[in-house]
Amino acid sequence: MALKLFHLISFIFLIFLLLVPIGHAKRNTPSDKKSSPFDFVKKLKGCHKGNNTKGVHELKAYLEKFGYLEYLNKTHANDDDFDETLESAIKTYQENYHIKPTGLIDTETIAKMTTPRCGVPDIVNGTNYMQPHKRKHDPSSSSIRTVSHYSFFRGNPRWPPTKTHITYRLSSNFPTNAVDPVARAFQKWDSATHFSFSRAGNNQNADLVIAFHRGNHGDGAPFDGPGGTLAHAFAPTDGRFHYDADEPWSNGAVANAFDLETVAVHEIGHLLGLGHSSVEAAIMYARIAPGTTKNLHADDIEGIRALYNR
Ligand SMILES: [Zn+2]
Ligand SMILES: [Zn+2]
Image (cartoon, rainbow, N blue to C red; front, side):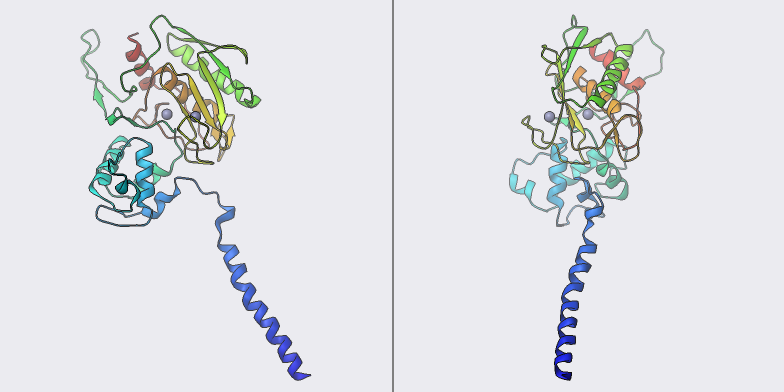
């Protein structure tokens, strides 16, 4: 009897030993904490040239996606070597976002890189339009030299000068709560520029088409789930603007959500021909924090006027 009891206790103890690690492992899985596709950068804190650290290849892919890096030899693109090319790409990134260009993955760089952003690259075909450029001095204006930070796409694509009225269409599955924010975003550009906008019917032809998509949706720029890239749009006169359907969207500033109108004002800027700006307050700045709203800034208006000579 005593032996039986001993066996029973041993058995229970064994079960207990087996269960504990499982329970422990379960508690450690970050299932309750949402991770962003850009969170891998946090693991690279302190990394610099010469390191070979697991995850460096993800950083290379990130910088390649946003135009900072292009390896002709694809082996280097996929390895974890923190090489000179990567260091130089990080320095350019740091300059664009007003961080000391150390080439080191420091706290400030991590904070910028992990903030959700627009999917449109900052650098197109190797030309960095985000670098501050001095505008040609206009003798009729004041003698103060102005430094502008807005940018255009390569080759300055724009709508023809005679095209001042632009129509837009919403995709058939467009969420009803996003209709008004988009209309208000167009109203902002309407008031600030020579353009006017109107919404076309669902089956009518329109210059611009706005839609919600998730993941890979056939335009060569797949979305990445919650966080990461929020939306993207194409240069004139393509007309496509896509929201990432996997994001928590909001109407106004709501904690942990992204404002539909703010993102629309930004993406319409691309549809009209603006690239990203290095001015943090400008609507064309590439990053947006959740729970915030933003408006057109003098830098954005100056950019569109310069592009269309208005
Ligand atoms: Zn953008
Ligand atoms: Zn798309």
